[in-house]
Length: 473
Image 1 (cartoon, helix red, strand yellow):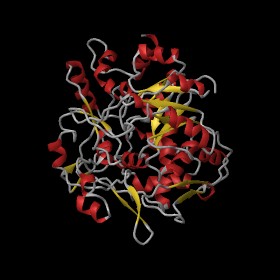
Image 2: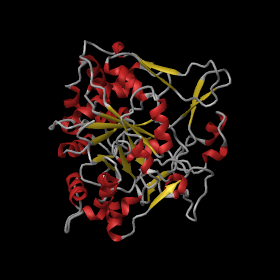
Image 3: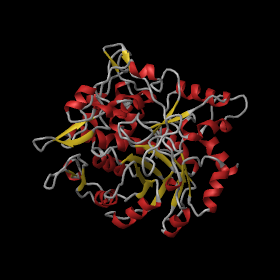
Image 4: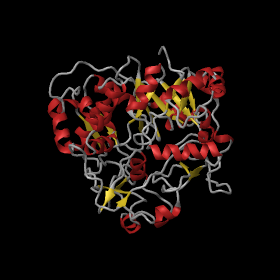
């Protein structure tokens, strides 16, 4: 690997790390990264909003399989956009045996996002996925590779099988991925397989195999991936517990501080010297969004740093404007606070939540919301009594969750992260013309310091301002 970036822009949320943000970062010469999480849903909602600016149509026009592109366009595009009080069209929830329609939507959505991020420059672009959201992986990755994505980053799990998937797709060969199913028994077939040639309308040249970076929280996990992955792991992003989004749980028995947040200790600290001994590039993440921390990382032998929160609130990010301005205002007034919530996410991973009035970070606001699970990206697959597979989420109605074998205590404090993250980027679902989903903004502990990027007499800053500050101090 050569010409490694000193700064990787984090792949944040659902649509926060949008093509606009990734394009802005990559155009400057650092690594812009789009979020691959729920891109099928984001793409469909952009089309139902009338495709403002015509960007989705522009990306579709470059898709190599025009009949598929036109099916997606005809199905979801609403000229002029849906009525404000109208609901977005519900997508089928992902299941092991996904419909062809949903697979095509994943392929197209990932292709368009990467294509738009690559526009106007010749520099590398990456895409970030959560290993925890397994079912969309195969068609999504194939769509991103069709668009020429240069890096694939994956965290929130142990992505042992992703390197082999990349190897297969480079040659348009079938690839498989095993779905984690709670209660699975020997002999159960939980394998998902994607066959590219079943979706190709014409021959396509061999694809470039992207560089694969695993996002991990420990040296032990990095060693495991190097030893056991089914292909080459090209490097690591080592993410600490101060990073935004989902954090790895603390090692050992969970203990909470006086505020109710998980306590991390020495066992959760990364041994950078051992990382260097692995002989592969690594980037440090979680509180590294300052010039001093970048210099520190480079001096320790890292290739650079991954920065999320600083980019989350810049002008090009997909986070809706009112949330950006409200939280920037809190930062400047010294009132910003991030709470590491051990319960909010259905994944059982601690989840960083920026405290914001009017969002579902307020208990009363969330308690007024009907318990609904209709996006389903974080559902848990489990084995039924008859040997089949069903799905449950602790944020769905408690009685429904318990009827599927879930424990009632697991529903306490859980939030519908899927719908909230879609609301964060201006695509909130509305039901019965009146119930509007509210957002849940995640940010790292570095939120309190992002005021440094705002120039005097200005109310916003850009991705270029972040990069200039980090590189030049």
